[in-house]
Length: 91
Image (cartoon, rainbow, N blue to C red; front, side, top):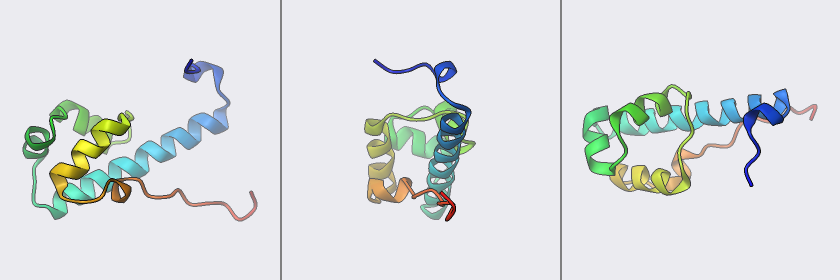
């Protein structure tokens, strides 16, 4: 069963926010490189424009399946939308 965000550590919530920001930036970069508007990508992928707005700003996450839909609409591999976070060498 998923754990509510309120029951996680501040570090975990921060890591999730960083991951959402990285994925959102990758989606926006790929969308712009493909010459698509949010509306066009929404129509091609089946993901709502409202969701794309929140996703690109890092405000919301997205399901694994929908990430594949976005990648397919963008003509790229899903891995391109999931960049690895920067690691602190002290960790």
